[in-house]
Amino acid sequence: MPANQTPPSHSYTPETWLFDFASRELCTGTAGIQLTAIESLLIKTLMLNEARICSKQELISGIDKDINNYKGLEMCLSRLQSKFKDTFGERLFRSVRNRGYCLVQDVKSVY
Image 1: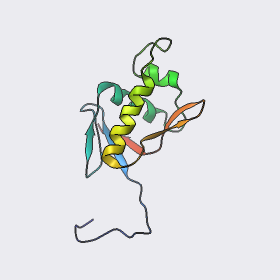
Image 2 (image 1 turned 180 degrees about the horizontal axis):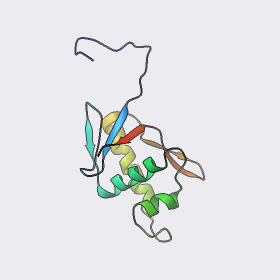
Image 3 (image 1 turned 60 degrees about the vertical axis):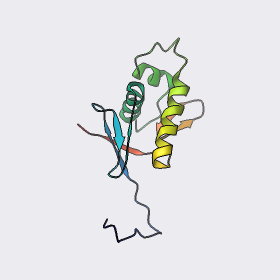
Image 4 (image 1 turned 120 degrees about the vertical axis):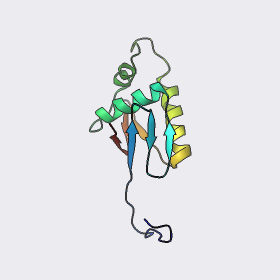
């Protein structure tokens, strides 16, 4: 959209967020955030299961941790959510009570 043109206030077009696993970056055409290795693996796991909810066990397995002993998942998810919200002003994923987490943004992989 040209700089001198403003979008109509009544229309909302969801953005597609681009995820580059190799560079560990999540971005749009206007901004990007650098991710840690674990944050990248979390997004990758959520993307592969975008049609359904990822359980905590699936997410822990997706970051190559022991599902019986790893206690840091919520902390990692909280940091990722904060990083995304601080940069883009929106939530990246949501929790589904007693089931797990799912993406609320359209995230596509870049190769």
